[in-house]
Structure formats: structure tokens, C-alpha cells
Length: 209
Image (cartoon, rainbow, N blue to C red; front, top):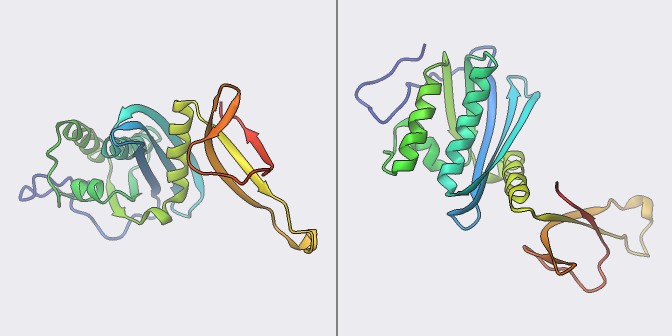
């Protein structure tokens, strides 16, 4: 079991540098639109070789970014313990979450204190635990899962746009450029929520269930 330091009461563990041979890696992200606002988390679970084992996501209703980040961490911990794993490395793009779990920052918010306590309870069930910070750009899949959970909870429609190749370019030499926009149907028309399109742009609509 990991050792604990009484001199750092806010911390949960003394981190060992090298993980055991068998361990899980969890990429975790959470967000809220409006902060607070519609919130969700996304977690990608991999084994030590980088093979994807699970993708977790959930819409959380009206919450803050930090609550969503903690819920993502807890989902990763619950997955590990429920499936009998004893070693977990979590990668998050929330510096606050990482520093609070490591004991660098104190947890002052009452709502986060409860979630911090739940995370601590789950961490103590592991033989090895590590958590580290990464920039959002390196946590893309978890971010996409979190946004998909928010979209689903808000009943939003995803609009997929395919741009045709230029007439002077050989079609076989062109790869289709795709971009997704979030939108919602109002009075029978799709209204884009996070972008704009030129008049006459052809689109394909994929409705999220």
C-alpha cells in the first residue's frame, strides 16, 4: 500500500515514481458551459501498453468545471476498483484538481471537499496511484467525450460539414476536410451555436440521441 505523510494533511499519498508492470492509465476531463452550467466528464481508460479498455462519460446537469473534473477522476477510480485493478495513473488537464489531490493546494470549496473525500477513499483502495497534469491539447479524446456528454444532456444536434474539392484539383488527391458544429433546431431550422457557415454550404446533419 502507498505510504501517507501526516505532515501534509491535504495530500492523499506519497507518489512513487515508477508504476508496477500492470497498471491502468486514465485520461480524464470535465467541463461546464457557463461555469456553472451544463456539465459533463469524459474518461479514456487504457492499459499499460496504451490499449484502450473503456470510454466513460456522463452528463452532470448544472455544475461547475471543478466539480466535473472531480467527477471524472472519481469515475476513473471507481472503474479501477470495480474491475479489480490495484494501480492507476490519472492524467488530467485540470491543474487545480492535480494540485489538490497531491496536497499542493488546499480544498476550500465545500462541494469539492466532499468529492475530494470520495477520491481519497478510492485512492486508499489502490496499491499504487499517480496523477499528473497535461495541457488540454494532449487530452483531446477525454475532452471530446466530456463535450459529447454535455451535448447529449442538452439535446443538441451535431452538424457535420464536408467541403468539396476545388474543380482544378484531382479528386483522388484531395482528402475531405470535416468540421463539426453544435446546433439546435428552432422552428424547423438548424441554428448553429458555435460557428457560422457561408451561404450555400452543403452540410450533413447527424442527430445525437
